[in-house]
Length: 286
Length: 242
View 1 (cartoon, rainbow over the protein chains, first blue to last red):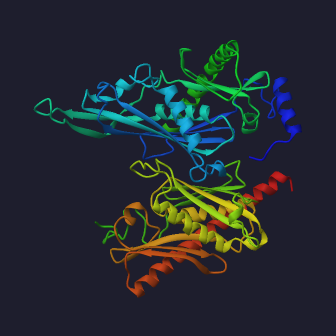
View 2 (view 1 turned 90 degrees about the vertical axis):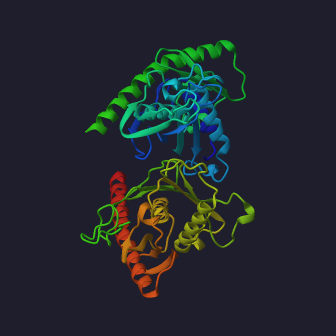
């Protein structure tokens, strides 16, 4: 990204202070979101989300695997994000690895539960086939094609849409003669179970610039941030995950205020995403 | 396996032996890049982004009388049927990066931009055979979108030989059949070959037929690319209010 001059920096700070950002938005407005489902036909579920100039694709593949011995009644989910160099030349070779792992870990924190698998936004026990022996492994792969800030929110929205588009194939299980035998699993090509996404959260990132916070920062606004808090909220208003980035210290009361602002903004975002998902599904059915 | 039906002459996906897959090109898909394009050949979908000409990052690689052209090819995790673990850095990706770089370098007028660097990044979203060719075609459109001076349009297409028939534009199933796969890249108007690769073996006279078929495919792609560029320029003219 080209550097900003002092005049441009003042313009960004001043605009945010007056609730009028460089592209005309208010502080708590999102850019227009456009959503497409089923973009990757060979995956179980996929989605492409465009948030202004930020463009991300998420694909979900389900493969049969063995559950963890610590959690024999839960399936496994792995989230892996890749930043393509088409988004920025700095991501060439291994340059994008740091950002990719930071995004992957933050998303795992928001969507998956703690070490025992409890409290996950995605219901892991719905992925089990035969307890202790066979379960579904969900691989969630995200690709950042174009970046104009707010990657975490866009990726989380894409994961939510892709999950709503995901069909897990029905399986017929043939248990072996003895309990130690590996059961025979017959994966159906015809029937699919739609994934239940009512509990899946969204992520809202609040970026603090000067004394105010903004939602959905562009790349230029992010370069002026002092700190950012990403809050993951679900439909019921429960907080599912929290990440603070940036070196500047924040007063605890400020963080509590940011969380309540994020909760308020997320309800609108969830309803926008739900209507986009419904529209995309209606388009797909036609 | 019957790659060409002996009775009807159709291939596995219903095409005739000298028929290309449906191609589609779109310019300007990555807003932040200097030039970008999406190119589809059948189910193979590829995005190319060009950054440059810009200042050379690594002063040691700077060339004093020419632009430095760099290229990176990456495949998304979900691009192939089985999930790939490593998106880039494996040997095949390194080789294809090199091939695309050499092909594009031959057509860019690098002596007009000394001390500068042009980065071409290609990302495969869906792979169904012919990714190399789709990448070169996408890179041509992206370079044109970035306004980088070129000698000519470079286009590429592949052809093979299965069941005693030369086949144009192989998809993944036909490519993995083990028959020969000839990839050709040409400078369209100047009618010169810049890229020629083949694996497996072919008798000389049949090779000439297959190569000629691939060149015909390249010319068809060039015709389509020219139309896309013309349409895009008309839209730019419209937006400028001319």
